[in-house]
Image 1: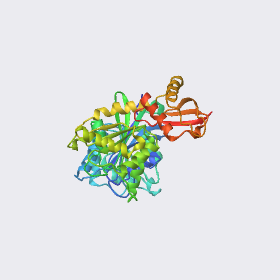
Image 2: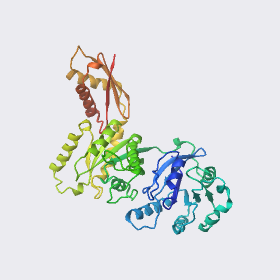
Image 3: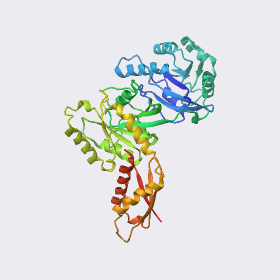
Image 4: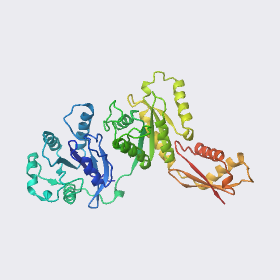
Length: 439
C-alpha cells in the first residue's frame, strides 16, 4: 500500500501557519487565536489539492525562547523535516525577522524541496506586484508565492507549485493503508501524552509538568505487528460550570469529537488521585458513543503500597462510580517506568477483534435457547416467548431478539442476556446492544 506524500508547514509564531492549515484542510482543525504559540504539538490532516491527496502537517511556531516547551517544539520540527516531501516555509509581509533566517538555515540543511510563502497580503492589487518579493530574496529561495491565508488569495498558484514539487500522486484514498484510530482521553496531567510517547518510543507529543500542555487533538502514527495505528492525544477534559476561553472551549470540543472518529478509546486515570466528576463526564461520552474502551490507571509507580489491597480498592472504586460500564478491562500502568505498557497493544487488538466479530446465526441461537431454557423472561402481563435471535451489525455488536411481547421484557432481563453474551463470546471491553422486536 502507498503512503500519502507529506507537506510540512513551518515558520515562527503568529505568521499564520494554522490559518493556512485550516484553509487547506477546509475545516477548523487547528485552533487559531491571536495569542502567539497556540500550536504546540504538530497536527496533520489529509487534504485534496487538484484532485490529489496529501498529508498536511501544521507545526508549533519556532521561537528563540529557551524554555522547556519551546525546546521540544523545535525538536519535533527538526525530526519532521527528515520525514516529509515538501516544506512550506511561511513568513509575513511586514518584513523578515532574524529568526526567519535561522529557520531558513534549518530548512536548507534538511535538503528538502521548499516553497517560501509570504502571508497576510490581503490587498488583491498589491499581491500582483512583483516588487513585493524583493525584500524576501535574502532568504535564498527561488520558489516564492505571496498569499493571504485568511482570504485564500493566490491559493491557485500555491496549489500548482505543490503539485509541481511532489512527484507521487494519490488519486484514491483506497490506495492508502488503513489505520486504526485510538483516542486517549482523561483529565489534564494524567499522563496521556507520556503514554503515547512511550508506545511510540519517541518524543512525539510535548510532555511537561504543566497541566494542559496539549491543546489540540493530536494524531500520532504508530506501527505495531504490521498494523498501522493512529493514537489521538487529546486535551485534558475538566468539569466546570463554564469554560473560560475560546482556546479551552475548542480544545475540549476536539477531545470529545475524537471519541466519535476513533475505533477504540483508552481512558486514562491517575492512580494517585480520586476519580472525579470530570472522569464521570468522559465515561458518559464514551458510553454514549458505544465505543470499546480500555481503562488505563497510570502513575502506578507513585503508589507506595502496590499490594493487592490497593489494587482491589481502585478497581472497586471504578466499578462503583461507573456501574454502566463495569465490563471494561482495567490495566495498571506507568508511562515513566514502562510497567505494563507493552500489554496495551495486544489488549486493544483483542478488543477491536471483539468489537468487529460477527456471530453465525445458527450456533448463536442454540446458545440463546440454552439460556432461555434455564432462565426464561419474567412472565408479567401475559406469557412472554422469545422465538429466535440474530446479530444484525458489528462495531458495536447489535443483537435482535424476536418475541411476541417486546414491551413486557424488563431492563434487568435485557442486562442478563447482554452479560451472558459478553461472557460466552468474550466481547472484551465492548458495548453490546440488545434489542427486542415483535414477531
